[in-house]
Amino acid sequence: MEENSPVPIEQEGFQAKDISWWFWAIILIFIWAIYIIATRENYQDAFQFIKAGIAVTIKTALISYAFAVVLGLLAGLGRISKNIFFNNLARLYVELIRGIPMLVLIFFIALVGVPIFVDGLNAFGAWLVKIGLGFIGTPLNEFGNSAFTMNSRAIIALSVTYGAFLAEIFRAGIQSIGKGQMEAGRSLGMSYGQTMRHIILPQAVRNVLPALGNDFVAMVKDTALVSVLAVRDITQVSRLYAGSTFRFREAYVTVSVMYLAMTVALSLLIQLMERRLNND
Image 1 (cartoon, rainbow, N blue to C red):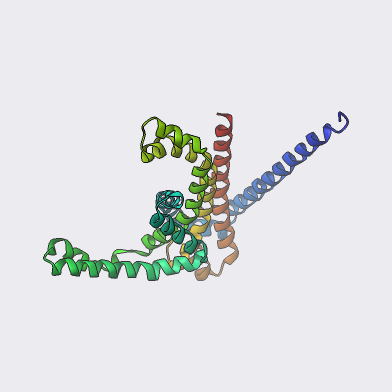
Image 2: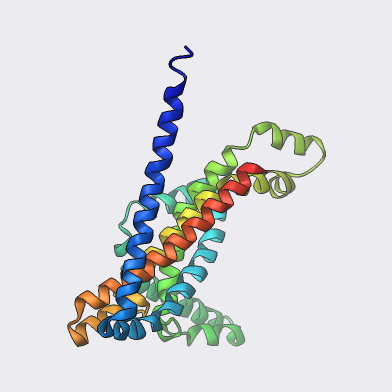
């Protein structure tokens, strides 16, 4: 047994070196790309043009993820609810969204779902006017599709899409907490909602924080999909630059480096957060 004990140590060392090798490879690629952009005029022009979309990309990711977290938490609670209606409604939402490709969902929600919602508001407003509540119904009846810009439609699409994935994360996090926690809270005279809010959810959120962070990194990358709606994020701006100058190499090397910088930085922050959580 003593002769075999060094084997796991060597394997752990190999795994650490392997991870370090990939990390340094990414850093070297990033440094090389930055050097190319900084020293070549064509790449500098591409960067100056494309960087205008950084603010749109970050804003879209942050707002979409904030709404997705709220929607995902509500759907996650619905998934574990004993109420048949809310449980099935949440299950329907999650299964529908997870069963359709994200690009198709973005098109559907932005170009079909939002207009249907507006038509519903108009019909509801007309009904309110008809029953004498014109002060409420008239604004709803006059509400038009133009009120939703393509940027806002993109945010809605990403929020609804990622809300379904986050719902499963929250469901798993809540179910990872022992049933004794709920029983202890109820025995202290707390209601189901109070126990969930003050005891279960804080522990569940702590457990799923790494997964939530990983999904945020994924959303930052998936914001590139909203370029199909002509949202001027860095992907759309790079396409415009490449189409007008035919400098495809400069455009797509530059935009790739921008995404790499954002995702690597976020991934490192998530790793630091995981270490702190594990040390606590």
